[in-house]
Length: 388
Image (cartoon, rainbow, N blue to C red):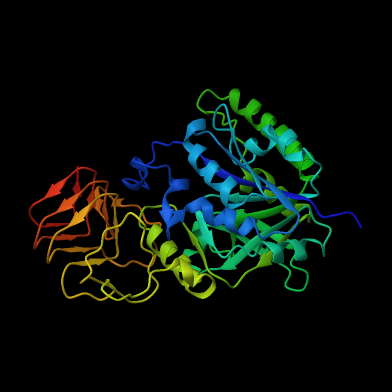
């Protein structure tokens, strides 16, 4: 039997005018934003490094080449057995368009299969289990899936599968009405033969755009979408299967969604790699729970990280080089859906508090449910405002 060979693609997207992750994305691209002490996609890479036979990881997107230089250098040092590269699209081609554009690079070395992972997710990445499940069927794709509360299901790609075979019978991206509480996690394992199906999807897209061009009021979209244009036809032709995980999964769309993702990864660290986490030491701060302290962070030795009777930070993201004064309180509102927009009907919605880079909160000040852009000095209290 020949040795198993696989590759992986992380779809990192590109710079966008969208404000959903601001102000956190003003100073660093979202894929590189630190969650639990590491860039979001570093957690993807850590999971991929444990897949036997996987030798290369390709980042595909349309950021400038220099954006990932430092990340690639660090990856080469930490994972010498992996070849990690960035492939830049000449423009936004869509989640499937980028795959097809770089198909020769993906197929180089003749891998049997390849993973595709969206950058904006956090999960336990049951990748070896996906490989094992994929080997048991004759489909072209195995999708990682999980169950979510019924009232949140329509915000994701929903699927219906045969319980006995895990064959996907129906897949719809963000349906208008409830279909299933089983959703796509944004992680896929493909056979390389899927490029034939992507080519068919391109041809279908061209036909649709050609018809749309006859209508002056319709704008044709050349971008090829993985979920809508490829996965749905795969389900209709019975070539799509699912592996359901019961481990944690979070989507990282908005700035507030970084908080539950951070908590989930810290809990995973506490179980699997507790040496990465801070502990209470003599003449040092009191550490309670799963806490990561960055090497550059300065913490008063009398501080308590956890429940605190002095300065308090709750349900908030504090930007780089920001300062919280004595007896100050920075607090957000805990919400069940962290992918809710920060503005609803022109009004600041209830959500976490976010301080941008180099924000100073003065002593005895309360900042509650606010979004604060970088380089601000807050000398008075604010509530439910966006501070420009």
